[in-house]
Length: 251
Ligand code: ADP
Ligand code: MG
Image (tube, rainbow, N blue to C red):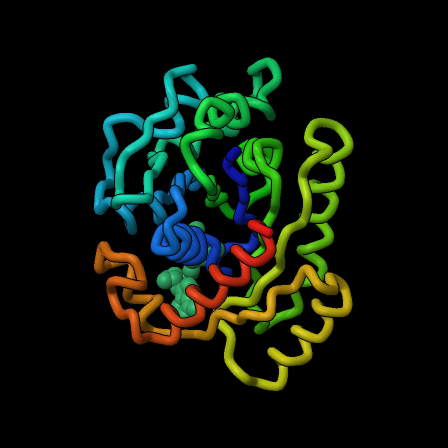
């Protein structure tokens, strides 16, 4: 079976992209799926969370910019990672003159389509060439949102990029899911959820990831949330999200 490629993107920072990539990836692996996680953020949060390594021998930058092979490191039994590096901050400039620059990641990943069940891409907080590469390589876009402020205006920008990618390069790209992270039960949260549900309908996942201290501590532990504290609300919520993903993507 061909890997399903999912990009987790939102150009707003701090909405839970990286926490979700790590937790969904490790959760799918616990369900027996083979998972490749791709770190496209120069901040390396995903790479560091999974490997404790700040200075990888080779990174996604070398593959995107220097035409080197995709570097893949093993994290656990069912989880592999393509690490990021600080240099990736320069990729927007370095890729600007490349021919067919939006399709570089897609052609790098094509070779691995049969080796994994899921390829999950964690994006930087921007909508430049790097994020566009992720969208061009993907079947699905998942958008994590926090519900504390009105996110609708920012989402319109993301919708525009998706529309353009679909029209010009990758007609297969679909909005797969919108889901809430760092959720608590305040009134404002509920109002935002209602607005988002009105706009995105059944694309909004039922599972909400609650604000949970174990999720904030997890990156420093070097473990997935399921190993760090499997009884935490964070572990419970992400496992529920994984089950919802499996229900929708593997039917
Ligand atoms: P992004 O990748 O979108 O910038 P992160 O996943 O890095 O967002 O999350 C931003 C910060 O919030 C991190 O410090 C992370 O540990 C913390 N965090 C993420 N999700 C939760 C949550 N559900 N509860 C508490 N803290 C969270
Ligand atoms: Mg991040």
